[in-house]
Length: 284
Image (cartoon, rainbow, N blue to C red; front, side, top):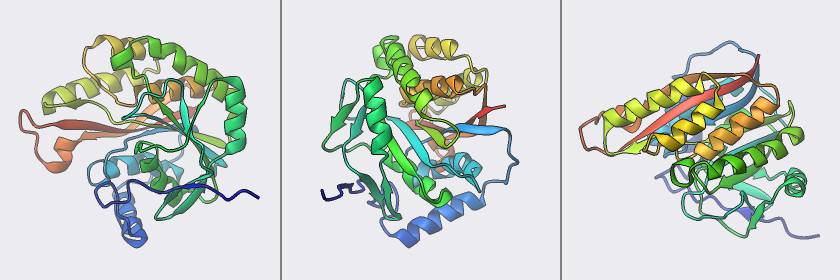
């Protein structure tokens, strides 16, 4: 029998999240204590959550993951950007599990093989991407037994334009028939990254206005034509919305939106600012 391969955490360095399990649990609990309990609003198909260090975006992410309280999903497909490398096709680390201080989460290799049979998936021996890993502590706190399919996407709309559209559609049409009610989709994305609090607020509000309309064509036009990057995980968001739509979802609700200037209390002009959003996609 082959030895199980495990991806060691790269974010457990106290800059992204605490390396000590007890401290990490305490921090997560403190975030969730600040989120009001909300009634179910339909069948939850997907979440959108940020992936910055917990001191910046953790509270926002908790607003998304609070909606998994008492939920049961067998697997979670996490879609996120590749910040450091262009892998061409969607890419997945070939390990058997991802580890955090809260334990190891198994990669659904069966689903990966099924997806690879439908569309080209790049297999990686290693990666240094944080956008996928930063979702895991929240999932581990909220869900019991689940597996993951962590997928990186390399061609953001703000750099590649509508070339990204076909890649998103291809992956969504491959994913949708393979993922049903027992599978949650998660789009990992921060929003605007600009040296202006006011500009981040403006662009992120514009993005939110389009998202709640669930008009994916208008969303892609906005991402391409506004001239500023508004979401580092824009491919993840579009693919998640397309996949959810193919599964019957028709409603997107924004639970919470903020930015690093709000979190740090420093909205000064010229200050580098990053936007964060928590949202859910529902079949009503």
